[in-house]
Amino acid sequence: MESSKNKTVAVGMSGGVDSTIAAYLLKEQGYNVVGLTMSIWDNSIDIPDIGKSGCYGPGEARDIEAAKDIAKKLGIKHVVVDLSKEYKGTVLKYFCSEYTCGKTPNPCVICNQKVKFGFLMQRAKEMGINYDYFATGHYVRTEYEDNHKRYLLKKAIDSTKDQSYFLSYLKQEQLEKLIFPLGDKTKTEIKELARKIGFTDVADKDESQDFIETDDYSVLFDKGDIKEGDFVDVEGKKIGRHKGIIYYTIGQRKGLGISGGNSGILYVLKIDADTNTIVVGPEKYLFSDELRAANINWISISELTAPMEIRVKIRQQHKEAQAIITPCIGESSKDQATVKFKTPQRAITPGQTVVFYDKDIVIGGGIIL
Image (cartoon, rainbow, N blue to C red):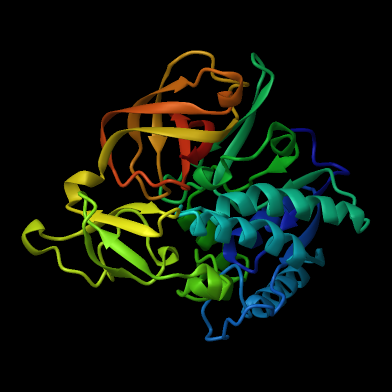
């Protein structure tokens, strides 16, 4: 990283403690800091303001005001960037499309790659905000690897707050311009620093990881996309009715409204959008030792040319598992790979992001087929 002297860094500010301290640390390092806050809520979807915090919803106005106040206290410029059309056309469209296809997407991964580290950076430049680097309060680290001439994305020092999973779709051209000031610090250190410099209210603020400000995702869908259908057992026998495939995900057992009888507790095993059926059965059927990933974004390597021993996460809260990843053969499969686990994993879910690691280095990430 070049010297901070005469360099400007734009910081994505949410009104929370992490982005606050990121901005503070960069200012202390001598950067000229500009705070950017996305506005993505457009009132087009009926989500009541019940005080619930989330990325998308009417509570955004409070977050924007909080970010403005923080920027004022820090003595930095603050700009609100309207990305409501981009968010709706990219993240929400993707989320709804995947769910209606019977998959379970991770909207945060797409939002980070295309909105926060894409449209936000681009729109700021278009608005005349000239900056050299862009920073956020994500808990990850980056470095440049001379031998292979590539930027690396690495786990944070604080393993309990590591967010590398959510940034696994960042490209080399994005990583080149990014700074993550919190990657080598713990959450405890960040909150203590916030209190020390007079941001106790921000340090004590409840954090939210919610995608939208409601637990009912159905508000995002057209009513015609939600159709009742059949629950079937592993042999294809109809055993009940479901409310619509958007309400279910692989591994789910609560809220099914059907009895397993002699089979015991039932879990969602498969969602078939073509027939609008959901296969349920005993938990033992949830385990598998293999998956196929597509749309892979390689970070530490330019491409996978031979089998590689790796560790894999099939969801954010999943404990990394040992596996071997093998490239798929054929021109149409160049961004696909198969992953063979050392031991079977529970509830491998189509649509979810899968991330590959070599110790603390992110090799890349893809979407589970």
